[in-house]
Image (cartoon, rainbow, N blue to C red; front, top):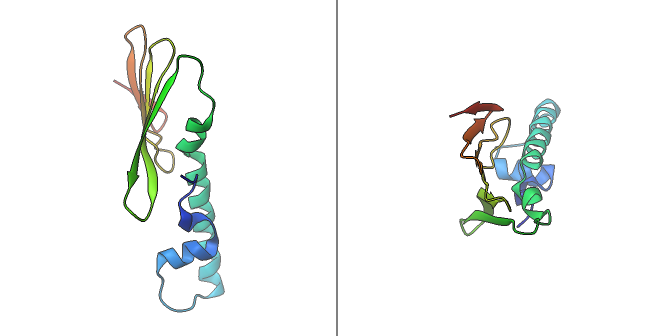
Length: 119
C-alpha cells in the first residue's frame, strides 16, 4: 500500500483523474493546483499507514481493514490494542473530521470527531 492514492502522486495525474474537458486557462490551472496541494496535504495528515508503520510496543496488537476495489486499495479502519488492554479505533478521513473511539482499561469510553469528545 502507498501512503497516497496513485492519482495524488503528481498534479498531472490528479488532473487526468478529474476528467476535465478541454484545455485549461492559466487561472483555472492555478486554482486547481491549489486544490491538488490541499488534497495531498489532507491525505498526508490523515495517513493511517504512518500510524501502522511505527514499531509496536511489546504486547501491542494492530489491525487494519483494507478495501481493495481492484483498481486501488485504502485503509478504512485501524484498531490498536495496547499492552494494558485498551482499544483505539481510528477511522481515517480527510480534513478536520478525524473520527476515532477509545475504550480504556478503567471502563471509560469516548468518541471524538472534529476534536470534540462525545459519549
